[in-house]
Image 1 (tube, one colour):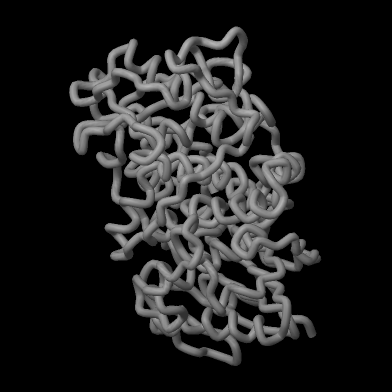
Image 2 (image 1 turned 60 degrees about the horizontal axis):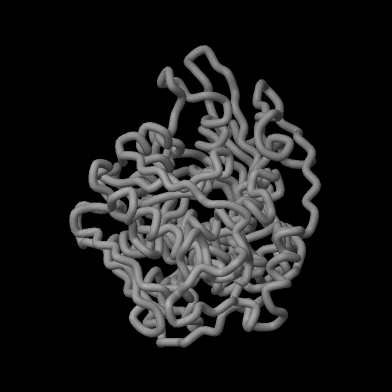
Length: 482
């Protein structure tokens, strides 16, 4: 999955509209600062302290009034005051001190779209993109004639309102009107949390990226969960104990103006922003903010840990390539040629195919069934729960007429019941695409974006899916054991 630390600040509103869901109602909650008495208090005149203290930044206290009106865009002076007070508020909630000021620069949505667009500069897909195409095709999110990179780029450019760049140490606000920018409170606060994280933990470290899609989602569950949780606690104070800068309803830095989002990709990317705040909230409630510091030292490794708030580790999956007749893996991509999509992406597969193709997998309407007020969507469903691990190996074969593609997807489950449920739901996806059974556990989707041959077998807690252009190719990609 293409890496981008940018925050989908407009994701919730856009996804609600596209998916036809409604957001959970948040109760008002006067939240105490994370640092408790450690946060300093101003005097009646809001005089500057003698030294830098928690809850004060660059001349502004967290509860100080500022003269900022975004109706005609932000002036340089207004932006400076807006950012400084927001930094003070992030300190007050998070209980951590900024080491330095955070630059905020504005870029146009067109510039961001050009930066984040998928595909190679010469229009030809490279090895990574071909490999990643097979991952998203295996999830039934993008089809054979679609570029997953372009779909990811278009989805992000349609929604992102701003992001923090660890490599540049600055926040970039994306707007359709860079000459008169406006910044949503939630976007600014969220990105300032990322800046604070970077100053404290260094977000450029490899452990916050991950080798696989699932490891990336897991790390994002912590990084984005922390930022989203602080953002939500900040929003709870607006109009109560704090006055907040209003944002004009149009012409600002909200999402829009990009390509058409792919809901399957969107929902996958959004998972850390939905389940991450609950994960962080539970840790803070049980152990305090020191628990978050500990998790940043050793980030979670699977989306299952974020969804279910568990420390359960994935079980190892050993895999030996036995392909023949020119079929080979992509050894330089992913983890020894494989990706791990994880429970969150599997949930999206079942939800997306239920919504798009009518597959009898899960009820897509249950996505909004959440109990925790810090949660947005429910990524827990029977066919994807019980995940223990998976490894997805894309394959390729050079022919006289071009390159053919396929994959082997080895999935491991906690129990045989979990494995059977996954197998049943996966077959329901094939049924939704009019798959024809050609042999035992062997199916062919005759036409459409997912026209291919599939072999779906189970042995105990292991379900293995082999995909190729034809039934004959299946035995070349993954020969049956004699």
